[in-house]
Image (cartoon, rainbow, N blue to C red; front, side, top):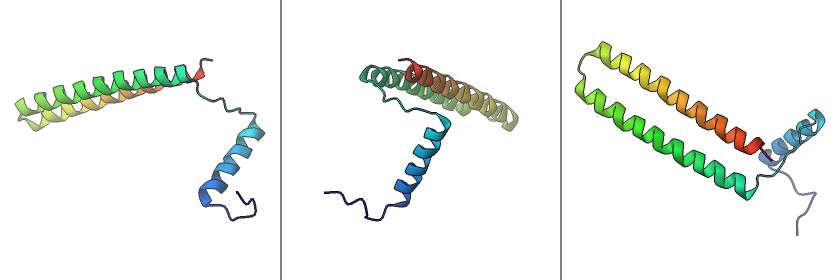
Length: 100
């Protein structure tokens, strides 16, 4: 049996404040459907594989290069590609979650 007068944890207090703030701002929380969960899982799996492939290719290229300048350029390119894939993944997940 839950006792409402029991002390709340810092987490519970923070979540309560956030819910009140969202309610005041007019933000409503909609639960994620099973179909949306499956679609998000597919998106995550796809991009996890793409990121792993990118990492493997990057490591292979690094092994062949010895010039520090070329390695730095390669590292910058890798970081850009990684950020692009993560941004694409996050955008697709947000799109899936926003569809009803």
